[in-house]
Length: 52
Image 1 (tube, one colour):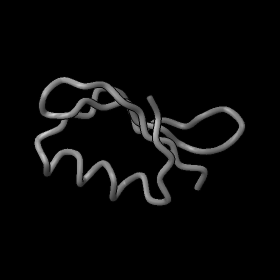
Image 2: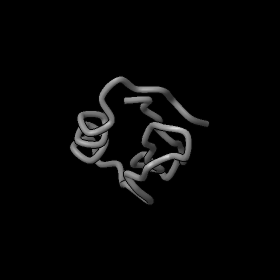
Image 3: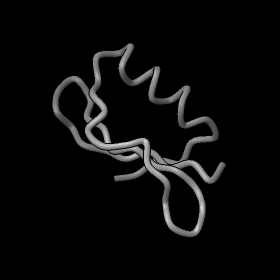
Image 4: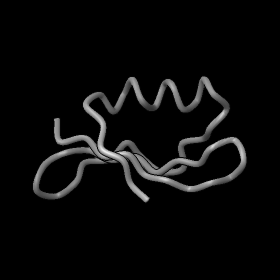
């Protein structure tokens, strides 16, 4: 699953503050944008994407 976000850096800060983990990234996406792959405190995997 992926979720779009307006502010990737702020979203990453909220994930880690809530006990989640960044697994990969932030990284540039070909064609524009950035993404990060993360997991929630229970191990659920997700990705965040930002066009900015």
